[in-house]
Length: 258
Ligand code: HEC
Ligand code: HEC
Picture 1: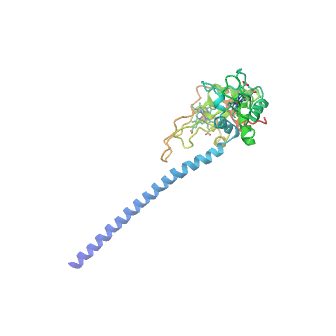
Picture 2: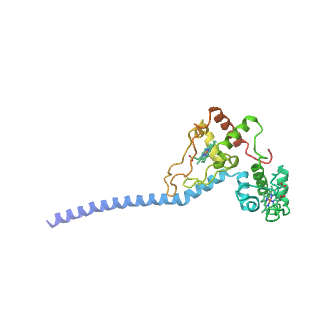
Picture 3: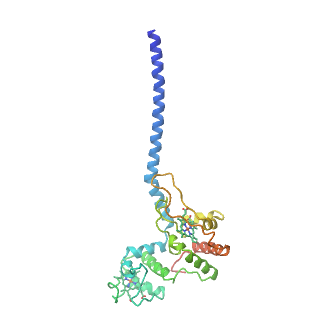
């Protein structure tokens, strides 16, 4: 009797011990999984964003950033936020003039808060050239294609408001909260290159639009802004010239040499 009790007792305890072990294993796996998700969220998302942003980087996007970082906005944007380069309202007529202003500065002028500081000694060559490029693009002196068909592709992009989301000449998009990348992709870097690797994908995105849904990591609930579908707004000829223009732009990114 005592023996059988002991036996059954020991059997019972080993069974519940096995359950405990299984439960413990299960909860340990759960903890490990939660840990992996947390590590992916804490390190993976910022790391992904960092390497994505590196692949997206280009001189024009840098120049646009520098217009803010170097205080150009302080003197050259009015109350409406649009750019104004001279008191008489005229625009710079050449890239050479922009280069001269950026490198050597300009004396104070009526309606401007002060003299323009020379940037030549303050910025390295890559940076001041990026600034000249950005002003040249804003003024339409750089980056507008001469080929008539490509130029009409550019016109379609302007009319459809593509640059508002994807950046001037596709240099890089505006912030897109809730998306994995944190920004709308541009057309000059790695993200667009991937689109080109899938046959017909570029046309498909333009016709049908696209939206990034929830990504299964914390803090990435799905993008606030989405790519509108242009299938109903553009006819097939417009779509073709737009596709041609985008491909050309990606292969010939705006630069001071062209
Ligand atoms: C403290 C004010 C101030 C700041 C800051 C400033 N500028 Fe200017 N900028 C001026 C003045 C003044 C002029 C001359 C305006 C005129 O001639 O009517 C000028 C002229 C220009 C012109 C026109 C040149 C031409 O001859 O047509 C360009 C382009 C320009 N600035 C670019 C920039 C850029 C790029 C930055 C930032 C790196 C910048 N400016 C920062 C005051 C400023
Ligand atoms: C309201 C903002 C907005 C406008 C306007 C817009 N897009 Fe987009 N576009 C997006 C967003 C957001 C994405 C990313 C979609 C996603 O992640 O699925 C995108 C994606 C794309 C892509 C794929 C890029 C990539 O790297 O994956 C292309 C190409 C594109 N858009 C072209 C255009 C063209 C051409 C126009 C104008 C006819 C345009 N877009 C207008 C927001 C916009």
